[in-house]
Structures are given as structure tokens and as C-alpha cells.
Amino acid sequence: MIIRTVSGDIAPGDLGHTQCHEHLFIEMGPSFNVSPVLLMEGIEEVTNELNTYRQAGGVSVIDAQPAFCGRMAERLVQAESGSGVHIIASTGFHKSVFYPDCPVLHWSGDQIADFFSREIEIGMISSRTAGYREITARAGLIKVALDSAGPTSNASSQKLLEAAMTAALRTGSAILCHTDNEIIPIDHVNFIVKHGIAPNRMILSHLDRTMFDLYRIKDLMATGVYITCDTIARPKYHSDDAELTFIDNLIQAGYVDRIMLALDTTRQRLRCYGGTCGLDYIRVNFINQMRKAGFDEIDIVKMTKTNAARVLPLDTRRRQNISK
Image 1 (cartoon, helix red, strand yellow):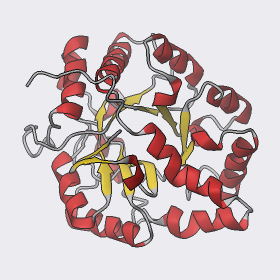
Image 2 (tube, rainbow, N blue to C red):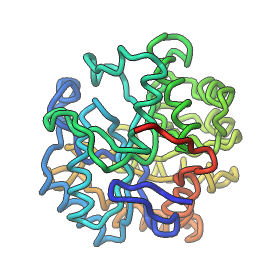
Image 3 (cartoon, rainbow, N blue to C red):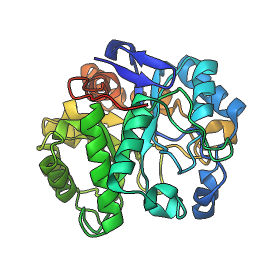
């Protein structure tokens, strides 16, 4: 079993402490028009941030920015080389508001699935400013944005989701899911499962922010999906104490093997840009809060290391050849 980083494949045992939904680089474009905090282009700044993260015990990170949405794949490679932190890049798609003129939106479902597959098997495209050229570094998982109106409510969103599922089956990749307010994720999970993706190949992000409803989340986790608790150090949503209570309730319900942690970083939150917490916040602050609150050390290791090492490996038994 392998986990695909931008510099090559590693064994699951090499993953170490992993934050499973971060954003390291976003180039100038539509994302900036949505929010200025979604501009993160500095290679020196981010490399320094990653070095601080590594010094605090961080080993790996998922960059959740997909192609055509501001991802700077070539800088991910530079940052991994300069820091020694394993970076797992994402292909796939985000909300259309972040790339209204994206060419992929006009492709057929088969073309989109081929593109996502190629980014995992052959090489990613670079940033827009670098000419969208293909580079040899490869993505390690597929990102999707779940439509709050439902998986079949919008033809374009459904086409993208079905293409992502095809590529996931073809490459053996896990699927990282963005969720928004008002979403009913069980509908999406059921839809994805009907297309052949097992629940334990899905990671749902932001539910601790967008659907802070333990009963519904417990029902969802009973299917076998993973979630990232990524509303940490975000007082505009809730306190860290509230986040700890939320996580503890899920652990008490028996779901510690399905929980992972992250910060969902932006320019406003990365210390290298004068932000509020820094990529090392979980290692330096939040884990200590967990210990003081009485969390079991074994459970902390599961949420920061073991669970990611189970869900992120490519299922090579499913992998098919992608033509060059």
C-alpha cells in the first residue's frame, strides 16, 4: 500500500502526524475575489511555515486545493523539498464560485474523469500563472465539493461528482469532501456508495462547523465514513472547548477510529502571513488541551496519525492503466 505525495510514494507508516485538510498555496484569481484571505503565493513564507510545523512534530499535510482553483502544484513540490514535510496534493473540484471560467466545467464526464485520473497517475497541471503545463508531481487524492441542494439537483455538479467517483474507482483514491451549511451529507454518501465507493474511502470535512449536530453526525459516521474536525482555533464559530466536547462525544459514541484533525488554513490563519494560529497549532496547543481535558493518548494518536494512514493509501487493487 502506498500514499502518494508530490515528491513520490511513501509507506503508510511514514505518514506520521498528519493534518488532513489544509491550504498551503492559492494563486491570485477568483478565490481572492471571494475573500482576500484566499491568496497565499509566497514560497518562502509557506516553506518557513512548514519548517515550523515539522519542528513541532508535524510530518504530513493534505493540501485541499484542486486544479483550476488556484492550486500551485509546482510550489507544493518546492515547499515539500524545502521543508521535508510530506504534502499530499488534491485533484478534483471545488465550488464553482471559485472558478467560474474553469475549462473543466465544459468537458464531458469522461474527459473530466480522465483528467482527474491522469493527475493521480501521470502528473498534475501547474498553476495558471505557470501556464497550466503538466508536471511530473502527482496528486494523492480527489477533492469534491458537495452541493448543498443534493447530489442530483444540479447537472453540472452531478457530472463533476460522477467523474470524481469514476476516477476514484479507477485509481483507488480516497475522496475528500467539502461540505457547506444546510447540506444533508447522508444523501451524498448514499449516492456515492451506490456508485461503488465504500464509505471508508470518504473523508467529510467541516461538519463540526457546518452541521454541528451530534445526532445526525453520529448517524453519518455509523456508515463508516471518516470526518475531519477542522474548526480548531476558530473562535468566530466556536471555542476550542466546544470543539473538544464535540470530539469527545464522538469518541464516547465509539467513532475515534473515524476522526482526523486539521485547521483548514487561510492567509488569515498562517503565522507566516501574520495570521492568528499557525500550522503547528494542533501540535503545540490543541493536543495539550486534549491531554488536559483527559483524552486518552492512544486516541490522540489515532486522530492525528493512525486514521490517516488507513484512509489515504491508494487502493492499487482497483488501479487501471491511464494512457499517456
